[in-house]
Image (cartoon, rainbow, N blue to C red; front, side, top):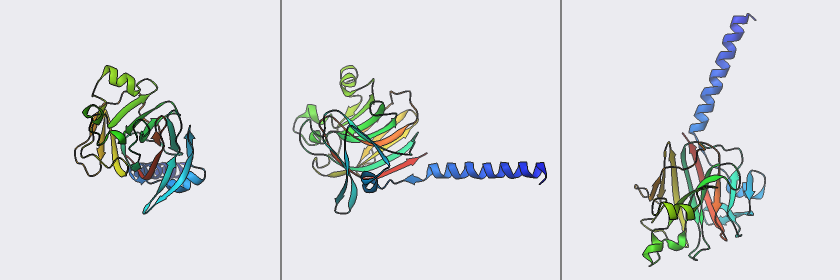
Length: 223
């Protein structure tokens, strides 16, 4: 084959690969959480994961344990886009912290958005404004953010979901902004500027200290 023809063919193949890769990044990834919980495909830190079936929802459950826990989906790297999921905690104070980790490195280095369902409908106004939280571990945990930037990285959720029921969350990561939507809301419950210098990393479901949680319908769309 003529060298110039071979070179053109190689360029064409590389071009097709690049276009296919870009198109793939724009498609949504919908991990099969029950299958991942039963076999390889999850990298779990400080928890155990089991498959969950609850009516039409098929997902996974993370166990309760002291400290924070994450189950990363293997093979997924996320930079910017949208992460959607259904989640269920419980109305027990200080025992239900459920959410999503992104731009993760390991079990201690990540950004996260999480919910405190026990604060959704409480009669205590001081607790109600602490329903959804952003953190950036290991430097910016909730204690540091609340002390140094009160009400900036945690907000109420309106309308408030059933604290014992399933609810849908959508986390939009776009450049210098992270927005959190709950249910069918068109206005975000929380908007923050990320504090981490990391711009990409792993994605996984997250639970907090002494907390377990149920997760289903995880959908990751990179942009």
